[in-house]
Length: 270
Image (cartoon, rainbow, N blue to C red; front, side, top):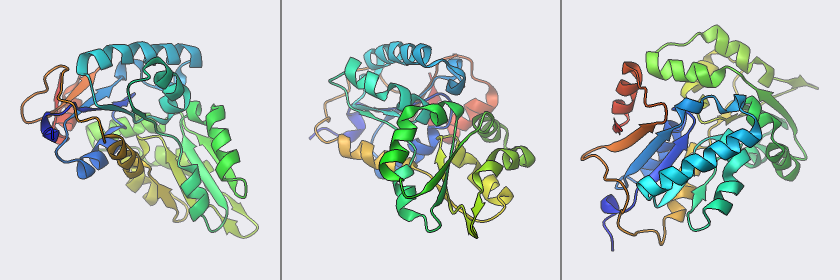
């Protein structure tokens, strides 16, 4: 059997640093694996892109990434990209396993007691038909409020790099998630952007009442683990640095706070 540490790495992809929440969980489940973390920061934020252009951009970028790193599997740790591009990626690269990230609407519908659920996401994820189809399939008996935030992903990036965030800005962004109806209240908020769990403590602090903040990172990591069976070929892509996993920023411009953050996650910047 191939030593997991010398096997092809797992590629973790996001528009920015949000996918680090998934990487953190994946390392718990797969401590012997190597990872390549790709932040498409040159194109951040994805929510501002037109769908056709973003789909073409991600497909072209993945053609290069798969050639360069030859990963065992790729995790699209981004709701906006997954809801738009995951099917196209699987069609373009049929021999390569992809794990997508979609809003955790099914588990939210199963757990809610009040029947009032909010999905906190980027505007891109909110407007996707994919998201509405999930609601129609799994949450027909719930009242689901879709809340698109233009600012939270950026606030999370600032918080993780600089260590502080404007709590009033966080409060304003999450406020529409909280609904009261017939003496019932929202009891679950789905964090449908991998950036958002970084702000979970600030969200709890500024929320008008306690709710269950549903973070899908562990479920995504478990799905990645399940797909690794039968993919234990030796690594044939670019060599990874000794003693650290690799972080790739598509802008090729990494400031000191970001570099420090990556080092804290055990990532060497390419």
